[in-house]
Length: 430
Ligand SMILES: Nc1ncnc2c1ncn2[C@@H]1O[C@H](COP(=O)(O)OP(=O)(O)OP(=O)(O)O)[C@@H](O)[C@H]1O
Ligand SMILES: [Mg+2]
Image 1 (cartoon, rainbow, N blue to C red):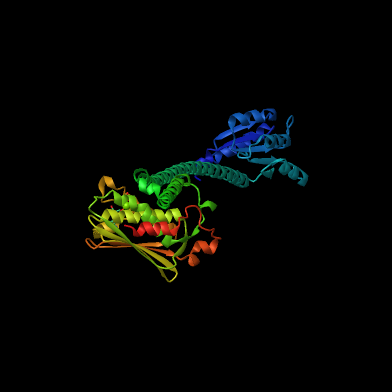
Image 2: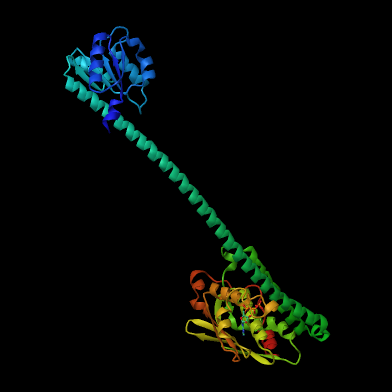
């Protein structure tokens, strides 16, 4: 703190004795203090304090009207905690009781007359220094508080816009996931509808099939399965934001049976081909191929693979479904003698919306299959070379080793159970 600041201090002298205030004022002037005010009638003390705003009060105790003690008490009653005016009491009464009363009443320091000039000067200086330092600290505090407030509100703003951006991102991701999923639902629902339409048309246009009760029943069962699978597909829309629940529990599934059902469901796709081109289905199904899963989804997956195989066979060809048990897994392969894939197509074929079929394809089939297999804790491999056909290999944990069967009791096969022989017959009657 520089000297000039100190000497700018406002000092108020309160003493009923005019000569005392004159002597003190002269002394203060001599040592450099020029902003001085003296009061000899103590009744005006508070009014002058209000107007003069002293940085220090030099106060006599023994005064008529309002004594120095009353001034101290008045100051204490009025003072703001932030702005305590220091009071240097100057008294002729050196008794301990007088000192105690003055200090209790709020005096900052006390000097007994007659004074030693250098001591008075030193006390005044140190009281003013302390006051100005306190002011500086208070100003610094205010400044820092203001900065903290500013920074806090800037940070709050930044956090808020970050949260808004995050919310928007989550919303966008949800929307795009929803769009992808909705596309998949449309894709698989159309597949299910194709089976419903194909088999119902066969019944409607073929009186012989209607007359043969076994065949009619067989077709109706396939229509029923396709309808139920379609309903399952649609439920994916409803379940989008819902975690998997009890209704989605994995069941014990015979993969051989599902392979045959899938061939039957996919068959209407083959009938759309040119009549002189034929596709033969072959099956190589090993004895036991039980897995834990959701039947409708596995059927959907295999049907999609068969559709791709059908599309990949330009003329005559063979599609083989093969199952076998390998260590703790059941492996199912869909093998076609079709056109195969280039390295680039093979790399990209699982991407949602990737298709080489133009308007004829959505590019969602393999992405859906991949999702289904992942949900069943399985893996998917694709072997394909241009002109050499394609093998899609799915590996699923065998029933006894499925993580699902370890966690929960698996209910028996529900819903769309269709007798093996109907499908076996259909599958081999290509
Ligand atoms: N068995 C296959 N043989 C040759 N290419 C295939 C085979 N399976 C898939 N592909 C290639 O992978 C691409 C993506 O297949 P995906 O099933 O995801 O979509 P898509 O079949 O084109 O359309 P959608 O499934 O809607 O009919 C196909 O367009 C095709 O180029
Ligand atoms: Mg496809």
